[in-house]
Length: 221
Image 1: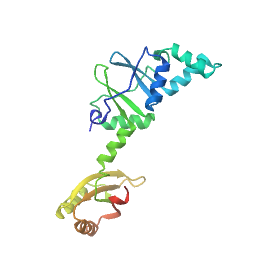
Image 2: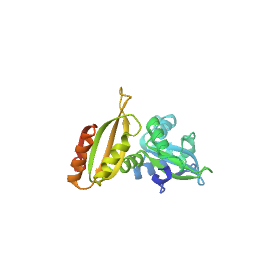
Image 3: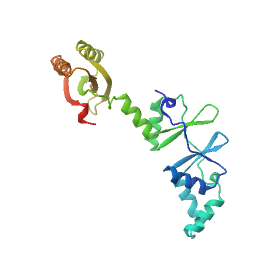
Image 4: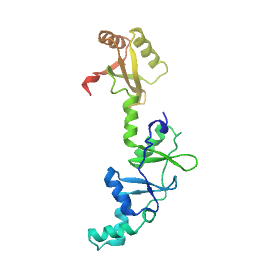
């Protein structure tokens, strides 16, 4: 999965020569905290609520709200925007965007092509959507947690058992367990005939796997 598969293409932007007051009105109208700043179709900066707040006191610390609006209407976005913008490419893997959003604690990232043209925006909510889809959370079935030794072939054995009962694997993910480097927490979602699912889980246990949790999907939706 790549950024281009999940990014939003319909983006609200401002021009660097728009007034700061215009940017503030757009943020309030759409419920945004940041806006990409363009010069033509090229990304040249980003302006946030914090940028506006940091800019306002230095220009109008003793003014009332009406005078402050007049000041913001006289200054342009380029006077308050941040020019050093972290971006991603549409061809970057979604994991790269997720890491930046998490580590920088951003709500969103502009997506630019090789020519610097703004082509989209990827947000933290978009990354959550990837997780929901990849984990098959909205699919009916059963979620099974299994402690698996971190060794080659373990997942293949489980897949063979599931195939034996003609069940469908919706998703499969493995997670490291803190302080237990030799074990992985395997989360697998399967669907199919309920009776076959129960027999399959029993067979997994009979093959020596430690099944720690069995949760039918309607229990977490």
